[in-house]
Length: 306
Image (cartoon, rainbow, N blue to C red; front, side):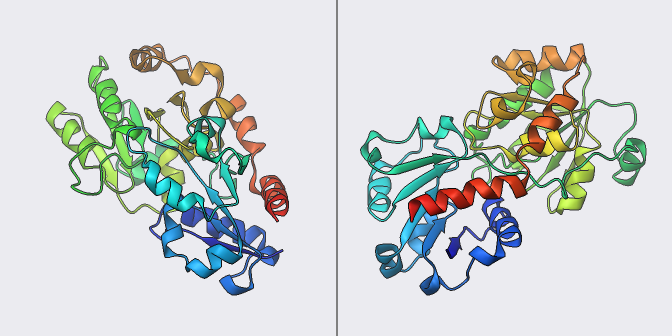
């Protein structure tokens, strides 16, 4: 069985998934689309980059990470659907948003894997904070997800809930210091500056640096409205970073129930109570999704499509 993995090539989670899956399953992955048995579209829009003759003559499985109901284009879906043999998503929350139109297609729900060689706890937090010039004596809150729409770099990407994130950090009785990572953080930066909240921004941090930045945090906040992951759920769990998350994506599959926030106001209450006791539980849950074990489930999915 040979798999050709088409991906977005934009330094996003799909690129990392392709790299990690290939490294762990090299005997099943090919860069020659003509030689493959199955095409794996790691993000739904990359089908347009795939020669039509291969889409028509190969088995095709598409990963749908999440669906934002406010942006969903039914006509685009219908055009793409005619080339797809099966759909994969990381969570039932995503499949629940799938249109009824494709019920005849196979659907697989397999969570994202995690890579414990990338994400791990580092005991000496003070040394790391000194390395990254993180101020002492502050509550340190992190967010490493894009928050701004790419078309203008001003409009908030509401599916990620950057407005909720800002509302939370602005409402805290004592102003925190915020660590931001990743691209397109203009919305949150603008809000923080207006509120007089200090921040550190590491736009191009690599995985080693991101792992260290997780280890500098008192809390990581996931304030999203819609998610496929987010990867921060797994990464925070493996680095043993306290995390609070809305009920999105894989959050309930990994995090202790007391880490799930159903009301945005609860973020503030839980942070200020500061009685976080769930690092070990979240860590053990994430370990069950280690890439070596997860690969078996993905390979079984491909065999079933063939």
